[in-house]
Length: 115
Length: 114
Image 1 (cartoon, each protein chain N blue to C red):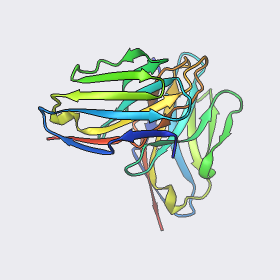
Image 2: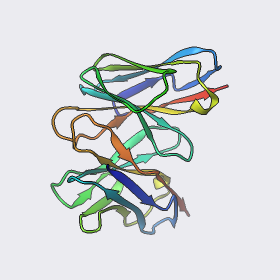
Image 3: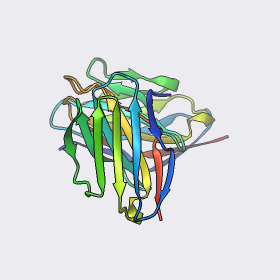
Image 4: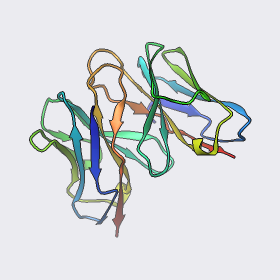
């Protein structure tokens, strides 16, 4: 248990559906991240939020829409996805204050399958 | 730009043997370096981190890593492998700024046979 929870753990959705992934951290951190992990590929950064402000969008298609209402919660809204979007989506958090040594704590991930 | 290269996508060892997982990094600034482990159907768990305090870093589960600036390496070792060490291992480098993402290597899958 890392203090970062993700729901749902598994999600199957059609290409025309709309769904949301939820991440919550109980660590008092100020930075939160979405990563995509596909088979045979390195982890891909999608979005970064610092103190609720989006500070990085790593050229992610608009069918993925993040939302960070407060420092403890992060959402990833999904709509009109493609089969190649099937992957493990990982949420992480870190202290996000000065200094880059602060390790990231990861949630267990949401296994997404797009049919 | 920073990058991480993990040599060998798959390493196999016998139980009780030395584990050596290789990681080389590229960075224009003094890096922060991390090793993470991922068990099946789970997220990433931090094994250890290098933040310039000491070049030999000890982590959880008996793992350690040595930072070698001259070789730009941060290899992960464990003297004696256990069956429970079978997992995927990721090396990562930080850009050294607050709240920035880690740059991950492609990962190395460790198999341990009895």
